[in-house]
Length: 222
Ligand SMILES: C[S@@+](CC[C@H](N)C(=O)[O-])C[C@H]1O[C@@H](n2cnc3c(N)ncnc32)[C@H](O)[C@@H]1O
Image 1 (cartoon, helix red, strand yellow):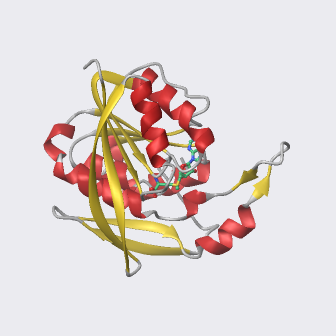
Image 2 (spheres, rainbow, N blue to C red; image 1 turned 180 degrees about the horizontal axis):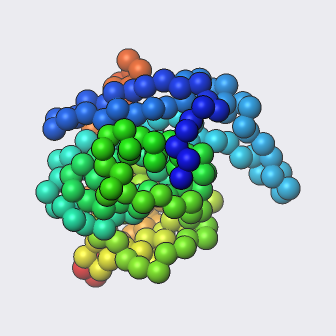
Image 3 (cartoon, rainbow, N blue to C red; image 1 turned 180 degrees about the vertical axis):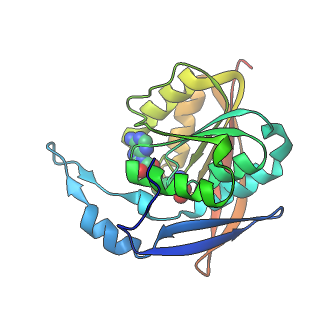
């Protein structure tokens, strides 16, 4: 994959963790890009390129991944909607083997570049995948999902993806910034054979502190 990012104004963000730090190359003015790249499809549905932002949820999930670190050693891990790739990069640092996926090829270019600059690309693969049309034929011990349940049309495809891809004793880790509709998504998960535990963490990004929830999801039958 071409990891040259010359088409974008770039900046760097250092995410400090307990065991180290991650250096991310990110888009410098995501608001401008959101305006430039937003478009409507044939059905009038608005497309918004949210991958151009680094979201608090990915920092919260990265911290959680660090806490459970040893369990990830040599585990096969899928990240969905990876954006700049922070959560998956920390999972690689903990010894996991991660397939980073996103619907946006441009997001994957950043994730790939970021994995390279943090020295984990030998543990990483990058696959363009829309969760409406998943493309694997295998199971994963961990699935990572930072801030991907913000819109209701995402929910059924994501629940279906979990049913398909989560190993019997696997764990899916979701993070989200306490949006009002999140509880409806997690009710849908429990209605479809999953159980979850919820924890909270505070994340500071660009000088602003916000609360992020982390959900540890398992199959009820496990
Ligand atoms: C709010 S961003 C979160 C990005 C990253 N996980 C983070 O927390 O910083 C949502 C991500 O989901 C991706 N996405 C949106 N719709 C998708 C779909 N149908 N299939 C796969 N990825 C999708 C976007 O491209 C974007 O990278």
